[in-house]
Length: 332
Ligand SMILES: Cc1cc2nc3c(=O)[nH]c(=O)nc-3n(C[C@H](O)[C@H](O)[C@H](O)COP(=O)(O)O)c2cc1C
Image (cartoon, rainbow, N blue to C red; front, top):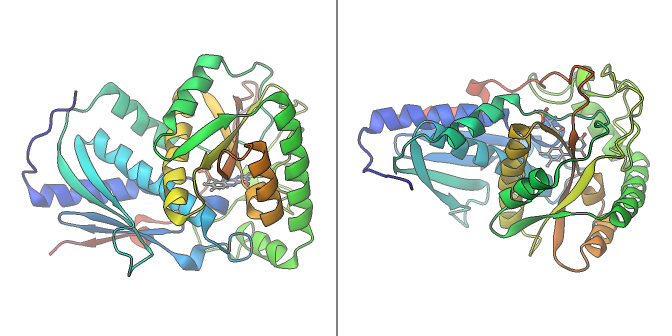
C-alpha cells in the first residue's frame, strides 16, 4: 500500500526531478541515439523528442525514437520511486507540441520499497548483450514475470518454436533489405563510427568480433567489433514480441515504457535481453510479424531472452551523452 502525503518543498522537488532525468540517461535506445531531452522545472519534468537524433532512413515514422523515449520515461519514474516520490504522468499532453512526449508532475512522497530499490539498481546494471545465450532455458516463472511487466495497452507474447523459425526467416529478409539500402548503410556507419556525437552510438567493444550463432539474426552492423562471442548457439533462448492494439505514437511511447519495465525485471532475474528491431523497421516484414501475432495487434519490437554466458565477461556499457547535453534545469 502506498502512503502519499502532500508535496512539501518545491526546491527539493526540483533537485529530485533533475536527478531522475539524469538517471533516465542510462535508458536503452536504438543505436544508442538517446533521442530525448529533459526540461527539469520546479514542479514538473518534461520529456521532449530530439528529431536530430532520429534514424531518418531506418525509422522515418519515429516508431523506434518513441520506443527509445518511452524507456527513458520509465527509467525516470523508477528513479523517482527510488527517491520516495510518486508522479502523475501526462503523456503527449499538448497536441500543438507533438515533440513534448510527457510531463511528470510530482504527486507526493511514498515509502521506498525494496522493489523500488532493486529496480533502480537494475538501471545501472542493464545493458545489451549480443552474444549467444547459455544452454539452459529461461525458467517459466521468470518468463511469466517478464511478460507481466508489460502492462497497459502494450503486451509481450512468447513465441512458439515454429513461430521463432518463421521469425528467423522474416528477420533475415529484413536484414537483406536493409543491407541493400545505401541510405540505411550510411546511417548505420554513422552511428557505429566516429562521426556520431560524443557519448552516442555503438562502440566496437559492444559489437561481435564474429557473427554470433543465433536462431534469429541480429542486424548486420557492417563492422566487425571486438566483443568475444564464443562458439555457443542461442538454441535455449526465448523470443517474445512486444505489440499493441494500434500503431500510433502514443502506443510506441507506451511500448518503450513496457520494454524498460520488462528489461529491468529481466536484469533482476539475472537474464540477458537483446532487442531486435530490423524486422519492424522494414514495412513488408513488419506486416509479416503481424501475421505471427495472428492479427492480435501491431508489432513494435522483438526481444530475445536468455541466460547470459557465465563463462565470459559480458560487453561493457555503451557511452552516454552528458547530463548537461540532455537535462536543462529551469529553476528560477
Ligand atoms: C527501440 C530499440 C531498438 C533496438 N534495436 C536493436 C537491434 O535491432 N539490434 C541490437 O543489437 N540492439 C538493438 N537495440 C539495443 C541498443 O543498440 C542499445 O540499447 C544501445 O546501444 C545502448 O546500449 P545499452 O542497451 O547496452 O545501454 C535496440 C534498443 C532499442 C531501445
